[in-house]
Length: 225
Image (tube, rainbow, N blue to C red):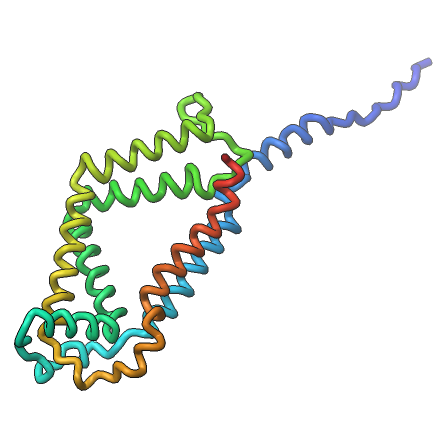
């Protein structure tokens, strides 16, 4: 007479599953605070779109019939001020092109500058405050991370060619702006319409983008202080 085999009971293995799911959720967390970073990108793109909408026609900027030699230094200064008020966006676009060309022709400096900006963005400004920075098994505090980034910024700007390239590009762009503004006769420009909006245009884009970036990064920075 054979005895009946005992029934097989199902075994629950919920703990490893929970552990694995929690580990997966920790690993799937983004390296940066995605909403804040996306808000910064949206602010910059909107400000750029608004700034470039205020630019003047390039044919008007390069109208050869409107150029003449200034009679005095004071007249040249007055022309520069009036032309800058009218061609503000175009002038700053020229400076941006000169800076971009200088960095493209020096790829090592461009890579160092991009790496520095990426370090500030991903390692400090938009990194979730609840995720400590771990490099080669060592955990860095917020003060240590900030100190390393400041030292790295000083090294990149003052001990490499990045700082000299940026300063040289800005000086070349400023020279082009002053030369054009001094020889461009502004009498045919509608400057009366520009005086009330002297604080609008591309400069407002720079100020707005800077303030938006500061406002976006403020919660992340204040959480670390």
